[in-house]
Length: 473
Image 1 (cartoon, rainbow, N blue to C red):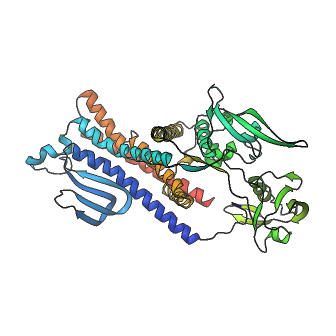
Image 2 (cartoon, one colour):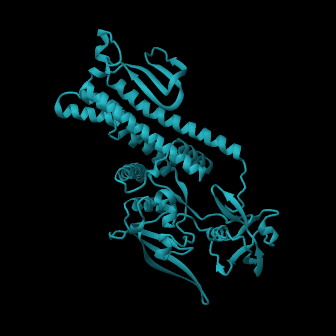
Image 3 (cartoon, rainbow, N blue to C red):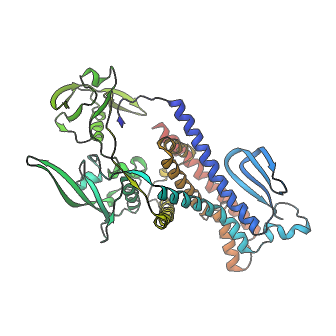
């Protein structure tokens, strides 16, 4: 259900949910990542001294019965580590030299280091596969009225259009559209590559002779997205597809609000505002919030089968750094949904496919930031992750599991990047060793570690800065 009254309720509860969802997500993903290193190290015969979640001073320390590994929960929870026996980090008893990490064949060291990111990718595949088997209620691919300046509006999409199939404009093979969520994900991938797409659309037209349907193909010109534009507006707003269709019905009038003063009542259907026909709840919201002149609006509504004309004067309110007009109503209604569920084999394939698609879009996004094709403003830090965690947790278990899968893939891909200090950087050292037959010199490793720390530090500062800017907006 949409709302334009702007009231904030349950802020403390929402904040607690966000904090709890963030802690659970970070704790789980770090634990899985470090467990990958830990378990493969044990399989390879390496002695593990400590398994830690977090950095800094240990808050909890314990050892299992007949275990040589110490487990720790540390003060700073934004990471973790597995400390293995290693002659580079301290003296090793001659009797245990064969258990030290540095004395293992290069292929074993490669597997141990790669196991952390791989564990995150496997977790994501498991989550996506479980969701595919269990089934998720998703939104019917029926779109609301696209914003006037959007690419969808330029292509000719209208309120109530149902998207049947999609393909790249340069391709011949169509893919069925099961849900609006699936469509928006495909659009995001196409938008990242600036590839135009074709949509097969079914429209319902109301004429004097009755309602008729017709099908047509429209081309959405994604090549028109400018470099960096997505950082300020977001792909969904630029494209104009992603908001589900809901009827423009007033579900609740806020007592004392502008709509109440104008005579609007619960269950009224808004037909037009200032002679602009209103086709759906999203369009209704835009027409209200766009009235920054604070002038009275002429509302035509339907109540109990009778058309009425009313005058409503929206009130200007501050929202972040900009003003919006509000009428004091909740509107919309239940959104049509479809159960998306896969069989055993198809579900397994779907889970693996989603990991591949999310990983690929992460790598492409990072590469395009480096080449300046998309803005570095797209980098997100812990504040954005916490916000997404809270929103997904409040949306339900399916949304939260999807969020965990997304972050798990992102963490796995990030750690595989060839940046010194990350797992991917160490893997590059081992590839060098395999190719040349000798390890990278310690002097070069130290130099590269410094470069890696600077790069990682800059990324963290930039991501946090982006988070703060988004919050201020």
